[in-house]
Image 1: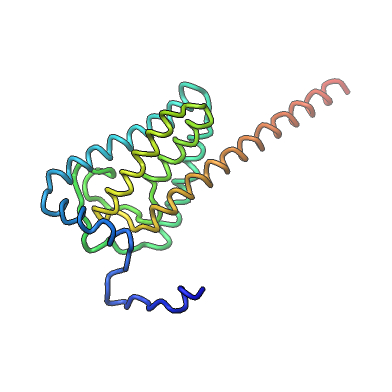
Image 2 (image 1 turned 60 degrees about the horizontal axis):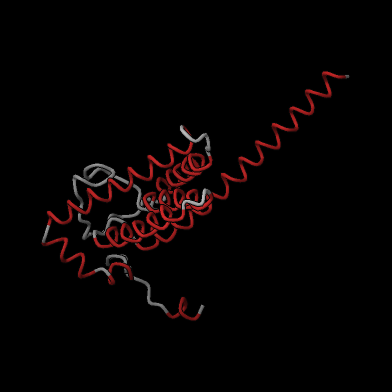
Length: 198
């Protein structure tokens, strides 16, 4: 609380202060002066988002395990609601790329990062299935994604941190939802059996 109460607030006329932006100032300068590198990294990040999406859909459609998909649906629904209710200004130094997802420089919600949350959801599912190497690979790629998003000013640091928490939260809620539905199904089956024999 001492830090909070002694902190000078950023004036409305100034850009927000973001420690992640300070830490990635050199990367931002490099990407600003080398647009081809920015486009390459954006394209690689888009491939990673495609990998997350493919994994999440694979677990449901091929393996018959819907938890990761339910998590993603919960997460994107909440992100849409929060993103619409509080629309943050795009950082002044934002470096967009036509190779980025969402494709091109279309509008998007800053709070919170669906890129990061989706990766966490996939990684948690991989851990449940004991796909350890794949989970660690996704975690490393997620860290690189966070650094790139800070370097391009595509998200504020808080968006990325909450993205991690959102991935964990919605994975947990999806597990609780599945357990609730399983118990409800068992209760309905028992009721139907009792009604049949009475």
